[in-house]
View 1 (tube, rainbow, N blue to C red):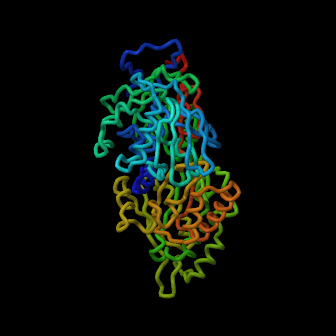
View 2 (cartoon, one colour):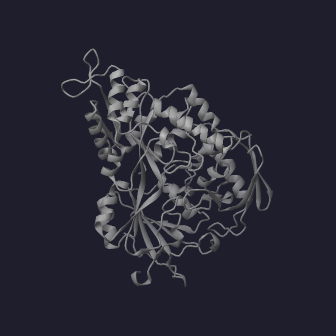
View 3 (cartoon, rainbow, N blue to C red):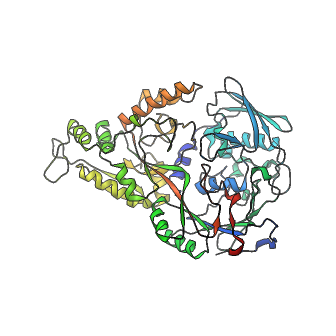
Length: 533
């Protein structure tokens, strides 16, 4: 029987919170093909050391799975459904505990070996074993069996229903058994393979250059039906400074970059660059320690939400940012706008604070009967400075004195991970693991591994548990609606903004379009015009 714990949940949640010159390289002397699309250079703030998202929750590595690997399924381009990829079809039993999955037979590893059912079973078993450190291990928490039932078919069995069915497998890169099956668990995550993976996707890894760039080239054996790449090569560079990214885009040294959504106005002002929202959108949240005064009072937490004007915040930060008022992903069909957290309601905020015993004083800061000011510290990562300064100003106008504290990435993650050093109020951003069947259990259930607010509510525990059981769509809608209402009343976390990353595209790159699977999901169609190569 395969078992694992939820010990990876917080690490994955926190890592996603902070994830936000080799042009013309001729590595390998590979001649252009008759369908040559040229060489494109792509940049992001920091390139991950590990490129295999099996062992890292890094958001850039997760993006790259569509370049290097062939997951079983993916979202359609709008994120409205699941479509086949490595899997061609699947059939679940009525209890959603057993599935038979049929596979393509025309995919090969980048070393030429066929990708088969044995590789899928190998990957699923490793993912379900906590010793191997799969970054999204909770997706396969109850997997008890994975077997080959035919050369192109596998059967998986769970001891509890997998209500999301195939959706969790959008994030699982299928790994090559013949390269990894002899590596013991204690050394698996440190294997050199994860840094230079031999995958099965439309691009294959070539090298890391002396300046840290990652060079990929088109894998011509990738099935045309899945999107054989047009580009001859794709070079990925890490460029930390957003201003430098934009300069490189404008000069044509770089053809596209993923950057923070706050740079959308800068990209638009250039006049030569195109700004696309890189889906899915992250959600920026403010977890509040429900055990620490004054945040232990739900009236105060609800007032903090009501005192925010999310539309004003989003407009001041970026044209592609939108308000967020619940745990559901942007555009979720389960969202009920009447059940969201209070927003832009200064009268409600004042009434709530009055009822909690915090009254206006001459200096503009509310105080209790003993004259103590309503104040606390909000801690966040350094890149959140502009957003949190705007939040601070809105709360100040409501009579709440908030001090801002900023930490660098590693120090911030360490502070949040340790319950003894965790700030009373914090800020982070994360990307939804699921678009179709969101699972808020980790954030909101009292036993959730990412319950940073130390929130305890029996009704919420019941609702989040029921969402993990097979229910009809009508029942699921009712559960989500009830949970949205309860979280809007208690406000253990303030959901503030839906902030997609920005895909900035230079004038030379053709056919770049957004996709719900991430910025690289359509990289196979990218090309550089022949006159610009």
